[in-house]
View 1 (cartoon, rainbow, N blue to C red):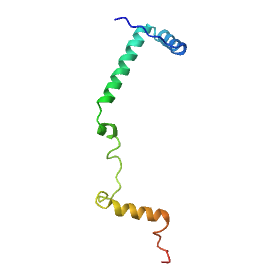
View 2 (tube, rainbow, N blue to C red; view 1 turned 135 degrees about the vertical axis):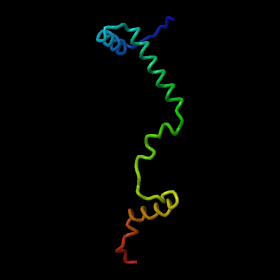
View 3 (tube, rainbow, N blue to C red; view 1 turned 90 degrees about the vertical axis):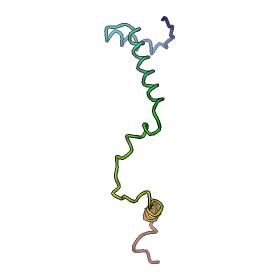
View 4 (cartoon, rainbow, N blue to C red; view 1 turned 30 degrees about the vertical axis):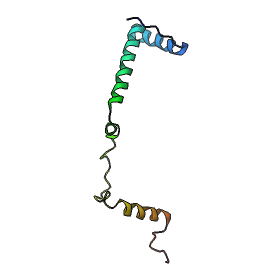
Length: 92
């Protein structure tokens, strides 16, 4: 099926250079590029939120098994330590 595409000079020059380097036609490069782009785009659209962050889940372990239960207490302790309020040599 014929399709007409207008390219800017820079893109056309890049396409020509690539076709020459690969000893192939511009049409073959364009077909492969469009297929690759469309497949990647559709794969990303199909992903669920968990899929997008799955590589981050379970990577680190704090050593504390009670983070969910004691989250507020742990955060308050850490914030007070950073602000200097929880120092042992506090005269109060």
